[in-house]
Amino acid sequence: MSVFKDQITRIVQSVPSGSVLSYGQVAAYTGLPRAARQVGLVLREMEEDVPWWRVVNNSGRVSITGNWRADKLLQSKLLCSEGVEVGSDFTFVIEKYRFRPTDEQLKEFQLESDYREKVMLKYQL
DNA sequence: ATAATGACATGTT
DNA sequence: TAACATGCCATTA
Image 1: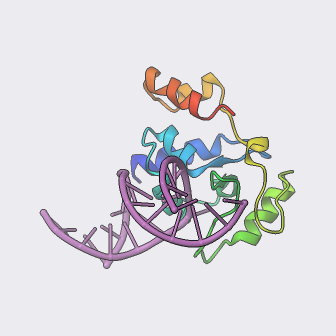
Image 2: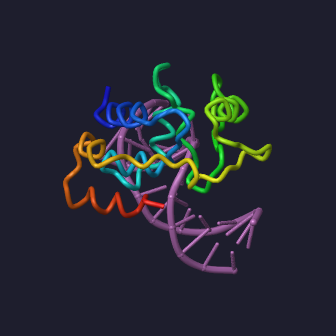
């Protein structure tokens, strides 16, 4: 298992029920802010105990495709069951549910302090 | 080594 | 708004 996958696992597992975060956000927390696409590729093969459905497109929509064990409808249902109001067009107001880690949580992602501040700025509303 | 492949993001039309 | 184009980069073939 690569470090990248390992980090993604930890990050996604730290997201509470009812919250969501974008692929780019996950990427940013791994220290590779431009690796959003890879996050999706990794999630595709992820373990069962990782709440993959809380990871969404930054524009506020469920964008999952080409996965044999999960599709947009399943993800939408899972999110709805957690209180995220997903419309029939698979969109929702992301800023209403976006996961905003505490300083403590961010530190657990082991990022350098100056980089950590940038990430904080980018994803606070 | 090299090249193709995307559950993306962002800026331009 | 929404569609399109371009940049990205860890994996895999």
